[in-house]
Image 1 (cartoon, rainbow, N blue to C red):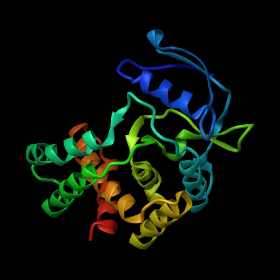
Image 2 (image 1 turned 135 degrees about the horizontal axis):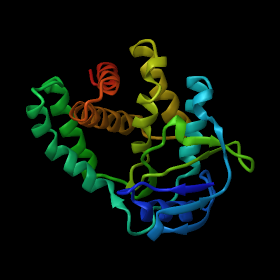
Image 3 (image 1 turned 180 degrees about the horizontal axis):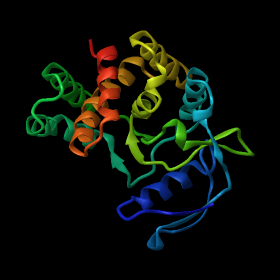
Image 4 (image 1 turned 180 degrees about the vertical axis):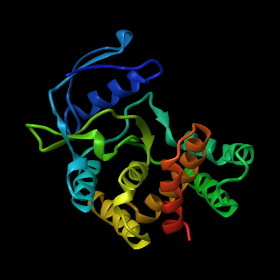
Amino acid sequence: MLKICTPGHDIVAEVTALLAWDGRGAVRLLEASPADGALLLEQLDGSRSLSALGLLDAAEVAGQLIRQLTIPAPPGLCQLGDMATEIAATLGPPQNALGNPVPDRWVCLAAGLAAELAADAGSDLVHADLHYGNILAGTRQPWLAIDPRAIAGDLELSVPELMWTRLNEAENAGDIRTLLAALTHAAALDPAKARAWTIVRAVDYWLWGLDHGFTEDPVRCHRLLDALAR
């Protein structure tokens, strides 16, 4: 597969991550031309993603894949501690500018959790855009991750995308908590830290989505917080 990256895409970080994984749980990089924004990748089945599986079955596969992708982060990647510090310091202005759409208690909770997470960020290689559509069927392995947004930090950062991208299939708050438990169990993650990162990212993404004119994603973030932030 030939991938042509859009302007602004951090192709260097993607190449760094794919080379570090070398096909372990992720699509294998065959050749790269960062200056041209071009990557030559092994062929996967683009018509079969993890979105086709039932939600809890897909969560188990995704969790196992997170564990398989777990290796120390190579040098040169964005540090999650820096990202968490920035989130903690910058939630207030968009909240105020947008007319305080997120309940203040959740904004305060997210800012506090982000500051705590920044002080204890890990050093693993994290696929920070790991949702069900970014896991495709392969031949040498049943499922492989694609399109990594590579960060050095906590593996639990992989969880929020997997929580909200199919949240409409979770009928109630209990189902949402069951989904979080399934992901953390399959990936052998810290449940408290996975919950914390989900809360932080849900508030951050809610505000970002409103600022960019999104309508469905803020609703999903509201549901997540209603289930997890109480």
